[in-house]
Length: 259
Image (cartoon, rainbow, N blue to C red; front, side):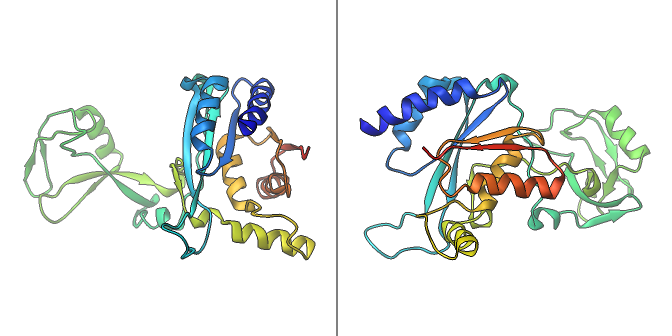
């Protein structure tokens, strides 16, 4: 009850401080995540729940107890979900490897046009060698032939010679975030090393890594947003904001609150 009484007024204030299209991220572990969801549903409204990210917070796995706890959660709520706009994250190296085809316009990956689950359109397409395919297609016949005319169809040469669309790497705006973040987003060990490199001593327990907070800011804020952290601890959020500004020329500002 003490914890709930401490969190409730702070979250009410946080909601009042948010812009109309603002979003809040809250880091929490297994002990209180169920209570936090209930408090946030009341303060922000169930309809404004955005995502509950599971973050693997540790590089290794302790071999103690009955089961190893290696994750925490990041809850996210919007001030108004109807105006929420999440940005995309940069493509990972794994995602970039999918762009393994190329033509005169550059690297591209294939997009499925013939799909028995999502396809809704039926019409006959004759392949280069005379095979006939009738669908179901994910795009209308008019759109298919427009793509073919512009060189936007990739024809396979084996099997049923299925046609695919082309999605070019140069046109990619990144990828949407998902609700599981692995160690590539940073870990507590990495956060501790970052603080130690700055201060030559580990003054904080379990500080968040800069890369984790950077990714949250990238999806939830614009290049000129104000980012508030009212449990600022080692001020990783300030570090992340300054680093992002240095990387992309943004004008984000931060407010850090310790007490």
